[in-house]
Length: 138
Image 1 (cartoon, rainbow, N blue to C red):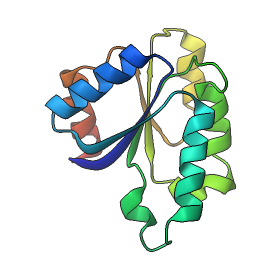
Image 2: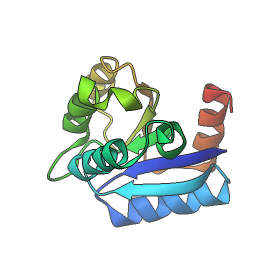
Image 3: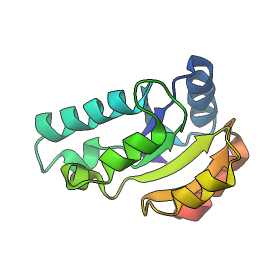
């Protein structure tokens, strides 16, 4: 079980479903949410600047579920920022793209980001969480 994960999605129903499935599967103790990439980056900035360096590993999410198409800041823009040295404290955080897109270009583009563990189609399911547990060996 993860201590904390972060779900980034602009759809409140998708976030609610994520929380319900993750809670039911006992996949994570704490589920944080953000409605777009900018909100997620603000969350990581607050962790970085308001947490003692010794406590950061315990406070940061181990996994992010990321939607791609969001207003304000979409998933790709979030990834571009998150993969810079400004966020190197979080480079052990894995990302699962959870999107309704089936564009082959998106699947190819995802390969350019080493922190992306997988690209899965919405909605999240118990089977997906089992698959992720096995993939991450938890």
